[in-house]
Image (cartoon, rainbow, N blue to C red; front, side, top):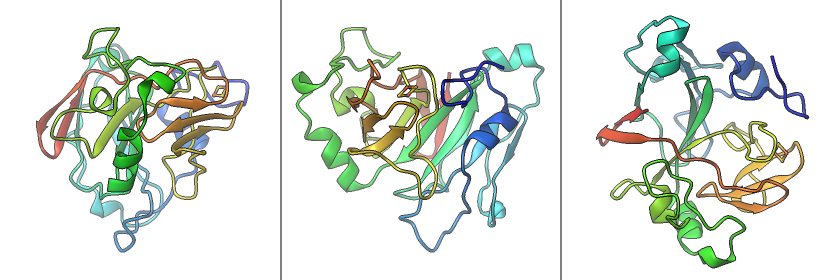
Length: 214
Ligand code: FES
């Protein structure tokens, strides 16, 4: 298994390796400010800590590896409260799903894209030259959600920012401790060596509470 310079796995890591790579936290429905962290993988899902039963996640298939590599996944985001985040595994990659707070949305929208290192949205649903506005990094009517591939664009580590107690960097988004890259609340690179914004995969809302990724 290839590993990033920090020893964290590159893309293609397994479910269990993701579990090892991230500090998982318990769900605490009483404290919506705390970030919950859940890993979902092709044929199975798990949460570390209590309150697993609070997460009525996903009708799971159990495909073989080849099917899994091609598959779209559906994610029930209804249990994810404002201020919480989950991570799902899709095509061997972690996908960050964060239910952003009004403050996080406001911070993301306030940014002048001409000041960004990477001015492009990096959104697979949009043309390559679409600018990295918050609007272009999210979907209309669902601006409170941000969905991104959770792999640092520097050397492929998994940034912190999903789990309870994680450092989220100087811009309240995600922080990659490997070499100190800071991403903002729209997943745009703001500081450190990473060259590009976190990638936004193809996804759609099947309903207000169900996502289809891929
Ligand atoms: Fe180097 Fe993220 S892999 S900063």
